Length: 271
Image (cartoon, rainbow, N blue to C red):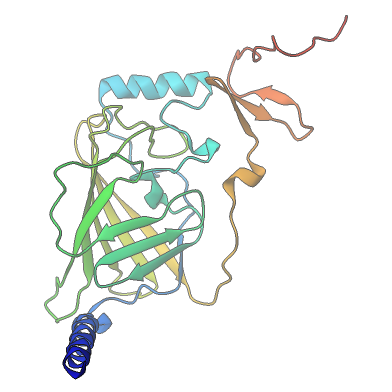
């Protein structure tokens, strides 16, 4: 009995040592301070206010046709409380919180489903990726200025599915969903409360890789509020059509010359 008890004690001490070693390996002083609440400067808005999208002729025509119709396209589903997907999620909807751990960089957003995980544990890309709206993101911390502390998170996102758009205008990404998104996330050297996310999108709807920088401002003394997308959503999906609910509670068309829904199962009023 004494022998078995000793074995159990040794095993317990060994497990504690492994746990302590793991804890000691995590040194948060080597990482930048991303604490607090972050908001996009200028609001989420358009993907790029000062750049014209380098769309291919085919996808420029898709974009213009949808804009002329005045409706929501296949590519834009956030009005139905779908996740914005990548890269649109980086527009910064709602309140943002960054959480750094030893193996994962978490981006938390209380909006629709905007939470992201960037794996920083040096894992390889899986042989098979299950496509999702936010994709799979793998990154690594880099000490660019050589001072012994990490200052930039470099990341890449693959394994995406649709529908996705760059912003609320319906600016499209290609339906083949072969998008690759590369990011550099870092604090501003001159302002510790300013964070930059330099995003390069590689997509077959674009004639070249497109780089846009998103900027976020830190709020230190804040209140975190609840944001439930479905609660006040006036959009109604019926079969393959989207309609709009007016302030008076009446169904309205959401695009030009839209026909009303099929009412065959409703009792029709007598004339």
